[in-house]
Length: 364
Image 1 (cartoon, rainbow, N blue to C red):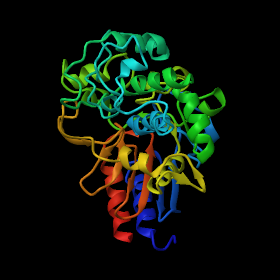
Image 2 (cartoon, one colour):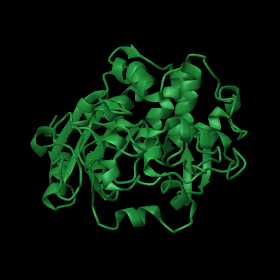
Image 3 (cartoon, helix red, strand yellow):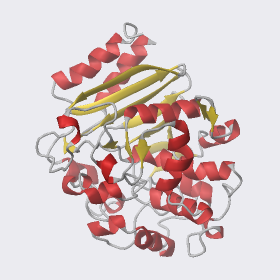
């Protein structure tokens, strides 16, 4: 099997040799079987300002790293599991389950990024990242930026609080605890929202590919993107991202910490219709609805045409999944029959994973 995927191995190692990568992992499952599982580089690149002391700095198969928006579909799946169990309906008004919520949006619109709440409405300091009640209260009282359902705009930081509060209102558990007990545990996935101290010690420290990465990522001052990513403060700041505050809090839109293997296994379970290693969590009908395009049109935050499913992006080649700012990605390709996850600590562009995908497709 290694010989068949030698081009992928070579490409992965070339990223490090060329200085394009400093710490990363790649996992690919094909036809339901693991065919690529690679790690490389350091968990503590110079200049990160981080606190990780994992394994002497060498990236290991169990190294966790923050994957930004790759976690959005994971948060969505927690709520979708409750939908699958009949605890709520996709077309329920959010207010039915969250009485303080003022925006006339449905559960489906929240999941598909069309609810009109892509920005936390009240300026908050970094410390607010650890105050779930404060931020969900802000969202409940907010006026939507557009009429729900009329257009999409990625809910960059708010998505996890909207989805997670619905999980909490319906089930009683936080989204992090629900994920651990209902999905990650049964499917043996190494990923989590809100890490305990022992797991924080397994984290790789993030680093900037270029010094101006935070500025270029925020975009034009005053734009929807800048307002969405800039509040609460600190979501692009290494001193925050590599801190116990960030790693221990539940910020489900952007702070999933995961291994590549865990993410590839998750998508393999979805690709198989909701079952992994003989453990069924989702019905095939729910997976079909969750991966169906719900919105196809302009995304006001991404400034491009986007096809949103219930928590994922759908691509022209039929694949579905999510990338995160900084370069981490995870998705399923039903046409070619594989799932892939790439996790990186070097915050840069998607050219690395694009090179790996070209190599992978040449092997299939």
